[in-house]
Image (cartoon, rainbow, N blue to C red; front, side, top):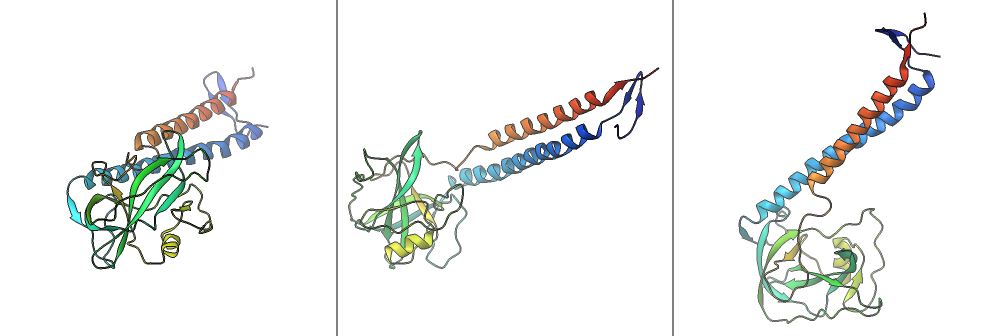
Length: 242
């Protein structure tokens, strides 16, 4: 049974009830997906712009208690590595290979501690073959971008703290790392500059897809919505009965 009948030249626009009820929720879903990807593109543009701004100048890492810096700000900090208390972030990949990110606490002269991400190392032949991430404990100057700890696609409760050193953790929150180390930490991580020694693979860039990819997906979803609407109109156009 048609919902309405509108003459259009030698045809009549008479959409059926079943076709319309099937089309509307699918159209709404496609429009929502297109809008969501468009919003994600805007968020990623802001994130990549922040990454570009971070290369502009280097600032001293603030003391504990100061407001966090803008994400990807480039900082300079002095201290000594706590070589016996390193953390391996599990379930992180590079070039489609499984591995760890190496977090090494850096103790500053005022007693505060900041985590330095020294980069990615590949997984051993077994989970028991942990990589050798030894590093010297001499005083040093570290430069890099501030960032947050990597996050999982789906936020889960903290995994077990584990045992031994280096400690293997999977997508921990900063509070869990503080609990494992037994001391408070600066709320941001320093991504060690690729030009500095004592690091591993450091191909730093904002996580996830670039904004152009999200924009491309947005165009695809909107194009599908338009195609669906055109098909619905075409199916609803009937020849006039004499």
